Length: 418
Image (tube, rainbow, N blue to C red; front, side, top):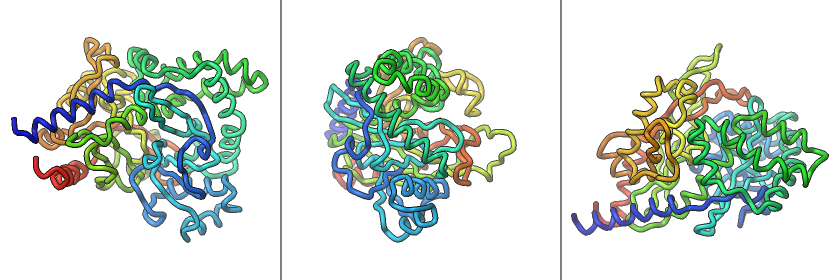
């Protein structure tokens, strides 16, 4: 083995070790302005790699407009679009501030975020609270109903859940996710089991800290099987972040999409993004919709695949296989096995009953992606390209190959050779 090859192998083992050694704990729910360090004023955080207003897809533009009205930075949606187009606000990826967000991923200072602390490494990660389904901001919703719900989450629900979490010292997530995997969740497109588990963890403390609002809060969580998704995303970001910044590592530490571009970041090449066109998901559409209704892939939620969940763990979730149009359970097992060919190794603490309790494949290695031609498999929702219309189906999608090709070229520039 050449000297550089041995350095790469050692660096990748270290990245894998850091992911497996994480101790993510849901510790709080706070206003983004208070939780996220160094968040500049009048900043809108969004999903995916950097993008300008002019290149944003319809759902993201619509969500931005709604967020500006929610924050009081515009009096109505028309003015909000003018403000956004004229440089009146700053746009930044969630990932630049240790955050993530589903679909459009819009996060502004007056919204509340879930706070996950990786106690093994001392870092924190953030994600907005899941709003539910249908007319919601992550799908581009921006009307009064959407803004009123966000106000309730920020003013009532978030503070109560934050108080409940502080009261009990947080909820450890590693073991909870391990249980969820054995109950059929893969933590991207199926979160029903973990939503029930987190509800059980929080219910008694919510009753103590906010008895007057308890009924509505419990219904809000229990009525949304995807409630845990945002917790899983913040957890995954907290797990992946310590693996970033390791010289010679060829492990992917970020995957994200904004509805226009798909971007990845590599552990050893700093904060550079390697991008290609966001792809259309392949899957099943709800009745009455066609492929022409769908928007290209969008959202930060593939941070779950980055740490071995989602599509990497599809074998754990028989229920999600049909939902995303992935075929039979045997096909899902095949997808998970193929992910083992492009990752550093398994995670023995997150195991899959359908694969004899094998650990989920973890830490995507760009060298293996390029040498095998196997691209990461991502489970995803399909959103209507028309803002605010919501989800129209679910499927699987892959990053464009050029992301990995660009990353390898930059790696060679930074480290001299492969």
